[in-house]
Image (cartoon, rainbow, N blue to C red; front, side):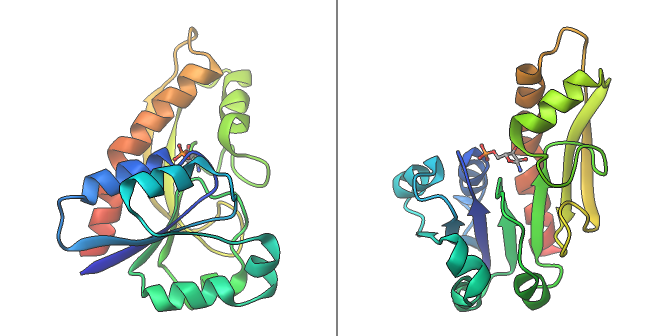
Length: 188
Ligand code: GRF
């Protein structure tokens, strides 16, 4: 049995999509979802999907070992950041080398780094009249959005696209590719 722990800060539509993808797979289980927002929509989804979920605050995350201890007890084969907005502390990256994977809604190294999340990314892509955008799935190291790239997928942007339709295109890519990449990483 392979075990996944997911981190999410917001809606959690990727969490739900990943959970659906593995729902009929007896060899993969979602051990837990961890969130840093007590009112995140992802918690409602976990409730509905019967996934254990845990909230932690900033102090617990950065100044105690409590998240590290939860992770160790969960024995994850992979830790997936699916829309998680806080920087991962070094004690976690050091404890789980090459086991923490993030998805970024653009083609890194473009549109990455601090403050580049959600609609900020898609607004910037639109403002720069880019002809393409996409997703980047990458390992997490001590710096935002800088770990080794596992997979990038591109999508074309037409002049009629708005930041909102760009976001929709990118989300569709995420739903299609993120679970498959996780599956491949789990099963080598
Ligand atoms: C996704 O676009 C992901 O790439 C980014 O945060 C967003 C999360 O969306 N890191 P959701 O919460 O899964 O709907």
